[in-house]
Image (cartoon, rainbow, N blue to C red):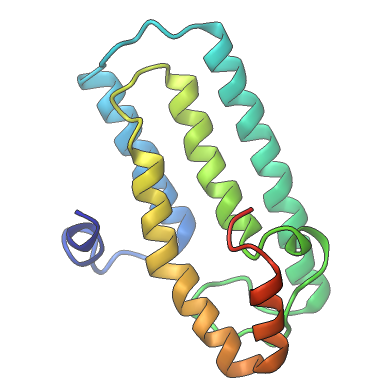
Length: 158
């Protein structure tokens, strides 16, 4: 499934995480709208989803600020000029991706249907294989021992 998604119908579209997030958010909406399985979830799930989305946006903003401070690219598939190990990067090597995953998870909770419940896992796999693994290889190549030390002491997600 993941290989089909990575190489199949989405091949050629802008390969950046917010676009992938948009695809998964749209898929969640479609599944909820046209195949709503078990929709008995209520206000608690909506509130939890909203809180998760709000927290995720805060983490993403905090993380993006560090790219600006270090004057390095935030775009995947571009070579960084600095290794960021401060701020949220002390706790997670990928706080922006964690935030994007939390947005999707929050949206699935907010929808209140079981039909899109597997989408956060699929999105996690896409982020890991399409962006995180290649970025980690690039960090090792560019920053060497410093990157290895950081990658070994800081968790990939949380």
